Amino acid sequence: MMNEEVKSTNNAIDFVVQVSEMIAAYNERNMMFEIDKLLEEAYSNEYNDMKKEDLGRALDIFEEDFSDPDAGWENWECVAIRRWIENKALGSE
Figure 1 (cartoon, rainbow, N blue to C red):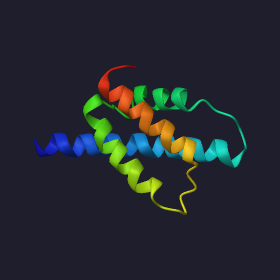
Figure 2 (cartoon, rainbow, N blue to C red):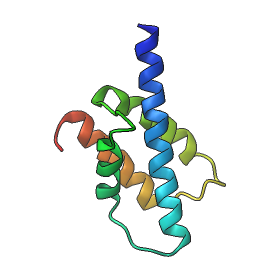
Figure 3 (cartoon, rainbow, N blue to C red):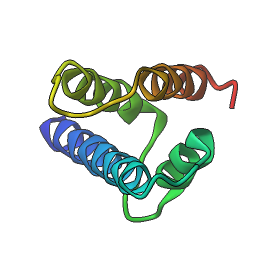
């Protein structure tokens, strides 16, 4: 059981890092991007090994990062990430 929790947490961390880094890179270069497409690509990335069960942990990590004023998240990004995770977790992909 503990190994499953560790694996799930690691999956969520890898997912959040990938998404955060990609969004930061696009923003830094003032490039437009489709956040839903970016999230879907990160979710289906074979190296992240994300599963629906991992989405709650990923959202918790995102929420902690969103609350950091120095993180640079834009409001629309936070809303879009929350919405995407909620839809994905409910299966209405």
